[in-house]
Image 1: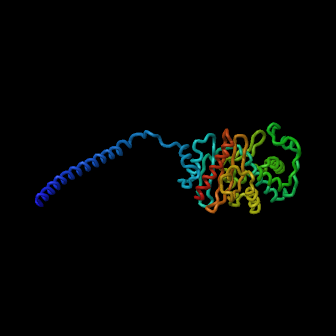
Image 2: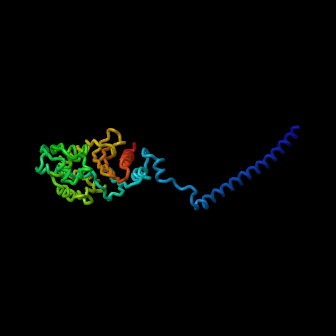
Image 3: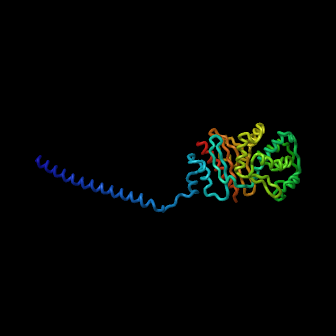
Length: 324
């Protein structure tokens, strides 16, 4: 019985081996066919155009989101936000610690809006420095006279009657911190447009002009970037005047663009500019990871949407530089 059982077990064993060999062969054959198919797909099919096109730039921006702190580079941090936008945007950005920078449309000329007040501020402080003006000196003018001098039509004028009287110091403060237009006109009339034009020439802002007659002030992102770089380095004015300008800019009350989405304790010295379809913001953002200059200028048929876009650009750049 044992021999019979052994014989039967041997027979079963031999049959099992044959089945195992056959199974192994079939498995190996299947693997071989799969490998050939995969190789064919890699070498042949990869040469064909994909049936599904790559994700569009606009969808990439939506998928990545501006809160992504793992941006590949500064260029992506900006362009992901601008994907799919209409109108014209221009930026100039530089980390003043690392030197990393990104520029786009930086030499395009835009109507400056209230960015021209940056030049007036520097020119006024220069006049105070040489004794031509004093901070306590009171400037007074009829609104109608200022409108006439600067060619402001009554239909578009903020004010058409009354009188404005401010000390030079108060006019400077209101011109920068709340962008008071008539404070700026008071100061500009006092020091003359030619003084502002000379400052542009002396400081190398060759792409900017003050505007005369029916023309309005124009500038480029690059010139505004240079302004803030010179200011930061102490190359725009004497140390006391540099500090005065930075304090004024840090006290800016119009914070709906560059600072809007940044942490509340972020220190930023900046100036906004709006006129017609144009809306801009530019300044220095202070950070433990490195202070940086950011200039964002735009011309669109939806300035309010452009302001939000500028806020998102600023947020994306801040996250990139600080990696929080």
